Length: 95
Image (tube, rainbow, N blue to C red; front, side, top):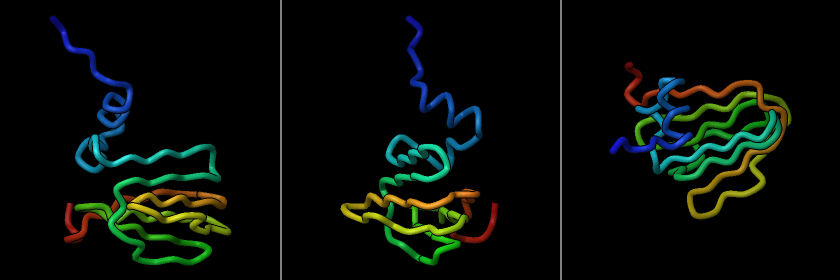
């Protein structure tokens, strides 16, 4: 019997994000104004134009305008504002 693959896993594979975002990490982007990140270790940098969040092996960099964290509780961060770009950087600086 063939096993069904969930939509989230198919999207991560299609965008080649499987290595970065796995089943435990959860990013939810609603439009360009609302991002929720679960399993965040800590907030590394915070300004109106850039926010950096610590995820296990990666750092998630969020760029935009008027960015602000509306909540940070239990490893879940919610970012509001005009989100222009999301970048994933390896912690060791390599690929």
